[in-house]
Structure formats: C-alpha cells, structure tokens
Image (cartoon, rainbow, N blue to C red; front, side, top):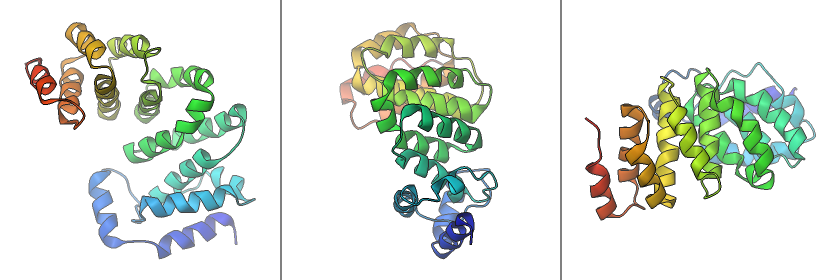
Amino acid sequence: MEIRDEIRNKLHTWTDARYREFLSGLIPNTPHILGVRTPWLRQLAKELARDSRWRNFVEATDTLYYEETLLQGLVIGQLKMNWEEKKNYIQQFVPHINNWAVCDIFCGELKKTARKAPEAMWTFLQPYLTSKKEFEQRFGIVMLLHFVDEKHLPTLFAYADTFCEEGYYARMALAWVLSVCYIHFPKQTLVYLQHSRLDQWTYNKTLQKSIESLRVSAADKNILRGMKRK
C-alpha cells in the first residue's frame, strides 16, 4: 500500500462529523473536509517526518482532502534539513495553499526555520508579498509575523503603505500583522497609523484587531477607537 493511501485510511478513521461541520463553517469554500482535529495531524506529522517514505507523501500532487494538504505542510515544518533544501519544499507547497487555515498553520510551523535563517527567509518572502495570487500573498504577509522586531518595523510599515490589493484574506492578514506590531511596539505603530496610507478598510480592521487584543490597555483602546475613519 502506498503511503498516501495508508495515511488517507488513517485519516478516515479519525473523522468527526460534528468537527467537520464546525470546520466547514470556519473555512468557507473548502470542499472535502474530513473533520480531523489539528493536534492529531501534528502528531501524525511528527511520525511521518521520521518515516523514510515522507518524500513520497510531501511531493504528492493528488491530495484530495483539506487534512491531507495541511498534513503535507505540517510535515515540511517538522523536517530537519538545511535552508536550501527546505526552501524547495516550501516553494513547492505554497501554490497548494487554498484557504486561510492551511496558510496560517503552515506559517506557524515555519517559526523555527525563520529564526535559524532569518535573512534568507526574508529574501525568500519578497516575491510572495507582491503576488497577485491571494493565498500566496497571504502566506508572505502572515510570515511577516516572524519579523515583528525593531529592525524590520520600518520595512513592515513601508510595505503596508504600498499595499493596494482587494483580496479579503490578504487584507485581513495585513491588518493582523499591523495589530501585532501595535501590541509589541505601540508608540511606533501609533505614529505610523496616524500618518499611514492604508486604505480605509485595512486601516479600520487594524484598529479593530488591536482593540480586540487582551494585551492592549483600556486607555490605548480608547485612543484607537477615536482614530476610526468614517
């Protein structure tokens, strides 16, 4: 039995109808959701990363289920290899991202990779930040969460001011990144927002996500509420 079929059979035994219904509402326009919980997929990914057949699974292009695609990304995140080799697998996987959940979970799995090779990762992300494909661009933007630091802050703000895309998921990602900038660097981000060239929707969504954060003080939330564009 091929590893893909072996994995698919295992995933079918883990399906949860109620969880599938929940995920279907959370991830719209995503067909073929089995309803397997992410912690189980993470555990399976760890096992697969140690399996000699992992390449056969990661390189498969005929995945059908949401969980299979996510599992490929999780395995890539687990792989211990040099940057050049891992970069190739990331590059092969990104075009298969077709929803926000796979995108964001995959980006989270790449945290250690970004820390080990920050400059190489930063350079690698640049084409994705201007991609015309919505989820490729979201991938690039969400990966910026690994670069919310003093060194990259001016560059993040400069990128945000050039952003002019209409894709909902890309715009939401940018608002998310900017809200995280506000959480960690409130003074610098406040100054940026007061003079930013963000479109009204992304600007207001950034304020909203910052206000929703439990890490922002009540006083700061009141300031942000007063900055809403109408």
